Image 1 (spheres, helix red, strand yellow):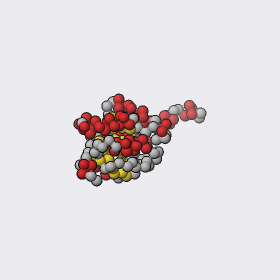
Image 2 (cartoon, rainbow, N blue to C red):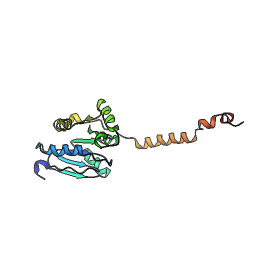
Image 3 (tube, helix red, strand yellow):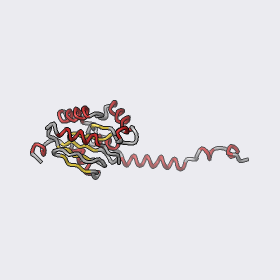
Image 4 (cartoon, rainbow, N blue to C red):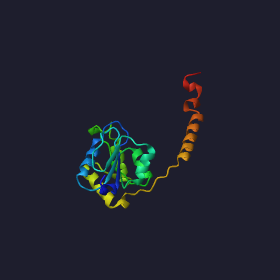
Amino acid sequence: MPTETRNAPLVLVTVGTDHHPFTRPMGWIERWADTGTPVRWLVQHGHTPEPSAPGLRAAPLMPHEELQAALREAAVVVCQGGPGSIMDARGVGKMPIVVPRRSDLGEHVDDHQVRFSRRLGEAGLVRLAETEDAFRSLVSAALLRPERFVAEPQVSDLPGTVRRFGSLVEELMTRPTRRALLPLRRRGRP
């Protein structure tokens, strides 16, 4: 790896684990390489063929701990529009650049990622890149002004959440059902 690339900022791209190919961002990465801007790419490409670009490392899937470490190290995070990927990025204080999968391109079964990502974009929780021009502009902006791509880290209270969930399930399991509360005669019995 050339010295200029070795010391370049890391751009992490994660497309999740969905079985549909997601070639659009892979092409964007390959064309980015032609700009001459030195970056290191780490791409979790799932079931999509990996792109080729100078300074690129790729893996179909990454262990959770490795992905979390890469998220923390990355100067720029680009992810698909799934809630898990977005929450992982925001959880380590990164404002992700989100490329939602589109059903009309065979990238997913429906357009829930498009709707979800647009809503989060409108709320200022993600930066939305639905086109290659937006992708290029946002990655360039994040490399130039990384402070504009920082999010308040979301701290999870997993043990508390599990306790609350367990209480709700227990309450549902012990609460009499509406049917059990109906008088017997209303159920067709004398």
